[in-house]
Length: 128
Image 1 (tube, helix red, strand yellow):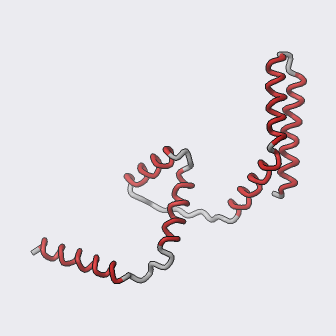
Image 2 (image 1 turned 90 degrees about the vertical axis):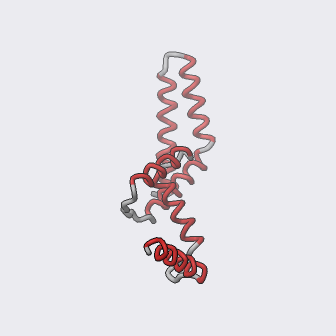
Image 3 (image 1 turned 135 degrees about the vertical axis):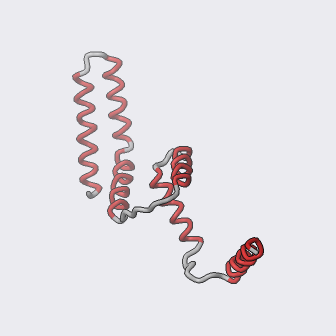
């Protein structure tokens, strides 16, 4: 959907608000609806840009499905709720940050190899 199409829909919504206001018998409610229409009119360009960007972003995304431990699911949902964002947005952000921090983690670093060796030594000692 183009920005012009989004603007047209927003303008239609604003016009509908104005029509509802003129049909409203209660002067206070009529004034509230007119103020709402005016407020939406004042930010219509920004709102249209945001909606257009959101549509473009969602068209460039692919869905994946992944199973995680129940405890991780609970923790993700709680964190997303605390941040007032959808869980999928939180997971998307966390994955993006992780990939940025470790762009090619296919090979182990010397430090990671040493950590694995230390774990292996500890497991060997504890199992003996």
